[in-house]
Length: 141
Image (cartoon, rainbow, N blue to C red; front, side):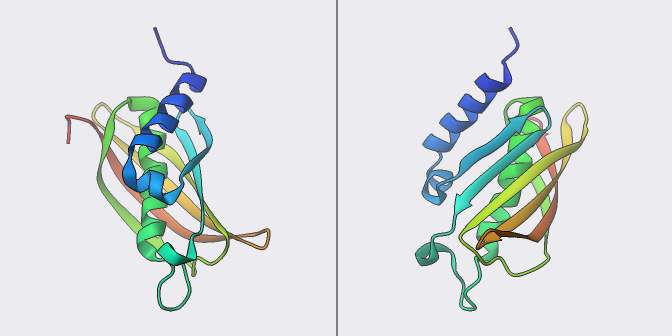
């Protein structure tokens, strides 16, 4: 029996609930479909700002990596990140970050996925990062 998108979304929410880092970031699923995943977090200044007042790049990386892995998981099931490259395009400032991961190519063992990360500041969205990741089916890395 194949899992429905609603079942997959519920499973992803359960994974967030038991993953300490994702839970501490307050990660939430925005959208989840075959080959696509969107997540968001509220910016917590006490945890995320670096010395210039921007969201720390490690948090932007978490958003990109998670969006890529979750998008890949929508097609491949249990996955792990093999590698990713993150390009920071602009300072991440605002009250919320969100990311969209989209599978570009799904192979037998590896998936190539792109993520775009956006900061929302006073209702305006700014594209702050882009990532390209190789995601491996668990046990295939």
